[in-house]
Amino acid sequence: MKKYGNPDASVVLIQMVDDHDLEGIESEAEEIKKLTKADFCLTPIKVKSWNQDLAPWPSPAVFGKEYFGNGAADTLSGVLELCTDQTKKYIIGGYSLAGLFALWAVYQTDVFIGAAAASPSVWYPGFVDYMRENSIHADHVYLSLGDREEKTRNAVMAAVGDRIREIYALLQNQNIHTTLEWNQGNHFRDADIRTAKAFAWVMKNQK
Image (tube, rainbow, N blue to C red; front, side):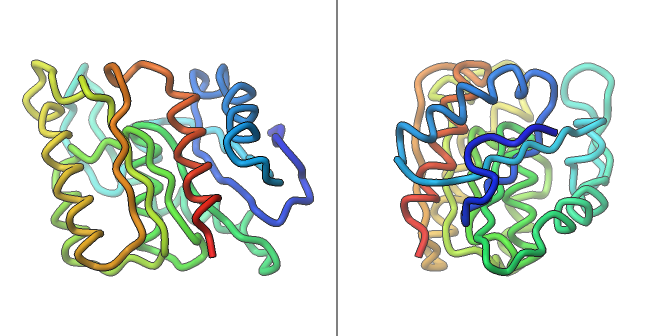
């Protein structure tokens, strides 16, 4: 799949994407350039089955009929095969369930220096408890949410605001370098710009 930015850059941004993400990937890369003025290689990785391949453990469907699987471990194994150059710094990020996957990934490995989680699906059942019970291996975590995302009739997804506040407080208490940014709008607004801001923050705050 096409990479964006400088293929030889020392900073590699890894993002799990679907077709919708790919529609905005060029504008996302351009926004990262504007925000950082830094060299990077944005590497999108296409996900075949979003709810299966990015989910850390099975969970019932919360909208529609498609349940969540437990394919995250296999997906991460494939990602790590692309992150073997020890002269480079790797940042993993993404939007929605891909943002959740990025957060989960930095609890599995120390390969990534940070997680850029834009509007992550932290409503996911059991995820906050998982973070409490396990150790993170990254130094930087960016979190964001749209200010209308928790205003939904879906009871499970409406918890996303409370959950992300809990996660932010948890990471702060653990002395992880983190931020929580509130964007205007619901979950479906400006995904490319929000993801760009997520990656840019981690890039600018890396050691």
